[in-house]
Image 1 (cartoon, rainbow, N blue to C red):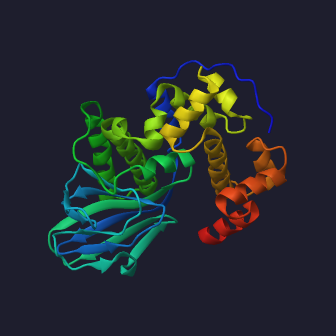
Image 2 (cartoon, rainbow, N blue to C red; image 1 turned 60 degrees about the vertical axis):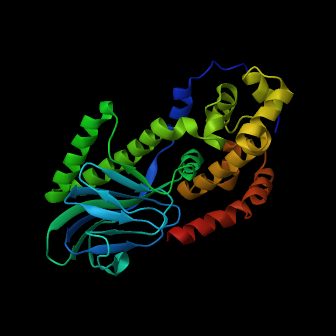
Image 3 (cartoon, rainbow, N blue to C red; image 1 turned 30 degrees about the vertical axis):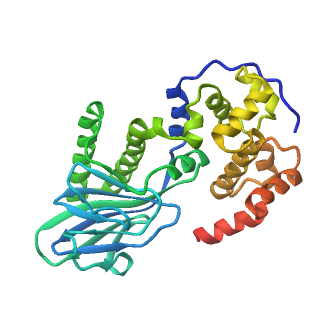
Length: 326
């Protein structure tokens, strides 16, 4: 691919660069479930590879237990996120008998929304739980940095009122499921997942190294954002260095040190990750059109790069994804 002459971009603030990442937090819901539970009860949730699983208690309480962590008590107004799809357990009390999630009877309300009723007839509790997936590589990169469990007990002051209002609305919809209620609950759930990630970035993002730390560097972060915004551009080390007003050698060394790989390897990896997500999302677009969207002058050049980085040809990857989602 030919190199491009790029005029230096205006300096972006850290807020702009993190905003670029948050912009890509568009998710696809795997399933959402409203649960009506009564003590004693316990549910064993299996691992769900590539998914983020969340739990909101709308009345009562529950314990959440994940291997390697102390059990945590969830109360109304709190939000728990298990970002890496690890198997875990929710229960009315520690040591309660457990039933496997997919062994329980569930009422299907829509393609991805279910009602579950379970328990021994004692003190009731209600919850909204779900599993979502992020397809965009920026979002996936962010998720990989998260701890195995996020438990938000107190929101920022500026957010607390509307988050609690959102949780109250979710609780009302879960209690009296009206027409369209499942759509309201799923959208509110998605908002709370994204808000939880924003909460984590605000409290812990500045302490991160690696990819997120590099994104927060004034010049390397700008270069990464250029790559994210315009993956089809004919980037090379010289054009990226010029865009952030650095010498070629200093830029290449600092980028590699902070990101953990060379600038051009990052460019190629980013394009291949985008291609992978596009193959999943856009089944009508030809491989040649995908290659053009990523700046490759031929389908053959794109296919070689894709197979080198992903270990499978684009056409085979699309077929594999179709079989997996069937």
